[in-house]
Image 1 (spheres, rainbow, N blue to C red):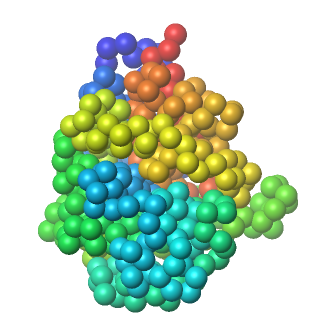
Image 2: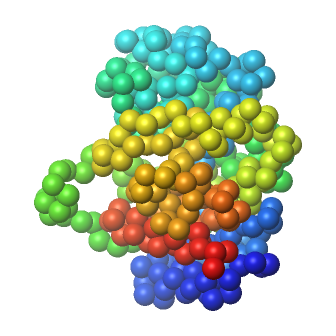
Amino acid sequence: MSRLIESRVESLLARCRREVDEGALPGCQVAVGFRGELVLSEAFGDVATTNRLHTYSAVKPTVSLTVLQLAHDGLIDLRSPVGDSIPEFATNGKEEVTVSQVLLHSGGFPSAPMAWKVWDDRPGRLEQYAKWRLNWEPGTRFEYHPTSAQWVLADIITSATGRHHADVITELVMNPAGLGRWLAIPIDDQDGIVDSVNVGVTPDPEERARELGFEMPITEVTDDALLGLNHPAICAAGNPGAGGIASASDLALWYQAILHDEGEILHPEVKHDALEVVRQNHVDWMGVTANRTHAFVLGGDDGQALMRGYGHTTGPCTFGHGGAKGQSGWADPSTGISLGFMTNGLDRDDFVHAHRGAAISSMAGALTTP
């Protein structure tokens, strides 16, 4: 734990432990990486440090980086229409949607449905793409695509390689980082995966709207949808936008590996693009600029890092991606710290877990600073 300030480590652990002791969460894990190593890994409540939990959207960068790697190798053209890779997609006005726009959540199909019955059925997914329609003109705005964009990226990976997307992701960006499979976990390898449960109280939508001055958007990320990912067959299907399975230690170590990578994992050009080149700066529904690269959300220097899932102590080049209900993974190049935070408690109130995440990230971000 060299160079970590002991009193701040204790405060971080106390903050996580409090969530369990006060009954807000049934269990949680917190892990910190530094100088390429795991320097802190603790668990509280009904989970152990060795358990795997649902990452939800925190798995997205592994998919995006795989697309970028394949593009560097000439197997995918980021500027080309998706229809060049998936002809079935080129219908209903989607003919000009590019691979880059899909990576940047500007494709215009944020809520396009993909029924769980076809998650492990590529022909069925291709039929779905043909039915999808646009909500708005591609490239003109940012609206988070919870799962639709990642399914398209997964099938682009398969079109380029002839292989299941999870196998390619594992081979290209997981194994070289010293980690194993996070997607499409076979049923006979699901021991130690902890199911998620709902906790907390659902806020009154009218009261919340009065607080905010506008109504919260309705998306596919519902309590029932998240709990559905507990099902072993669904876990095995490998939902590329929400089906990740990992521990907090896995997240912290993977971000250390990406942070310190010198070409063993990513092509240098891919790393530069993914960690430094902001390509999406339209505003989200909260009025905050997205500040996204092709793979990550960057903290930024505009005072809005807290709204992007990072703490107020993290640097502007902090890169990462959160998951539904408070799962968190990021690395800060300015301090060398990486954080993984995971819980099996899905708070029904998004403001509660957002506040929790901001506090934990802020404490982690200050672990090396005087």
